[in-house]
Length: 255
Image 1 (cartoon, rainbow, N blue to C red):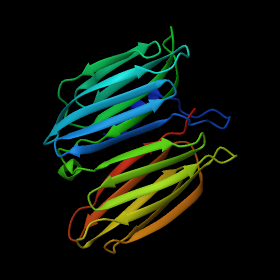
Image 2: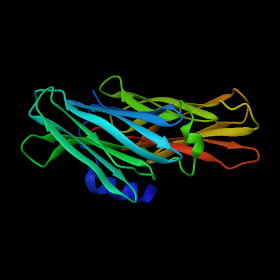
Image 3: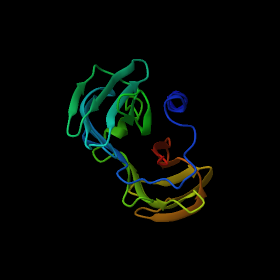
């Protein structure tokens, strides 16, 4: 699925950001399990708001949601949902400040790719957008643990925060745009499991930085100041003995 997500994103979103230092004001995305059989997801762009809810029974899901245009700016709000093995589940666009559209889908079982756009009204052109990928849980049932999820948001035009949580590990971090259009990341990974094992985390984006800990309740911090373009933050836990399981989050560079 990772290769398919990369192909779709390369087609639907710009290959590189603008040269000017971008503003992330009103950019955010998140998803999390609030029940062992259900998760929620959300996303915002300037003038765009998305909220959605999905059931998840042993990896088989369906979802409902709302896409809303929240500004009088000559722009429209658009959401596209894609599931491997099914194809596009939703493609909805709404124009007009305060107007919204509801959607619902059939079942899917191999994860959900959520694409959020801001469209130029009266055209098929988008001027802002990103994707959020929610992995399927059929082969990773621990994902259905309440609290599992990931999020990122800009709290100023150039500074952002992010978090990735799955059983055994939590990653939290902050970053900002640099004057050279590079991006920084300052992260902390914590082992939340009480069993024997190790928690690790990694942030990549042109350059990479990582760290980990095997101490119960332990944490480790790591940073880098020369990332470029989109970042990927991932958190992993490997029990001993056992298999390492990871959860990744794309943190887009605004444009």
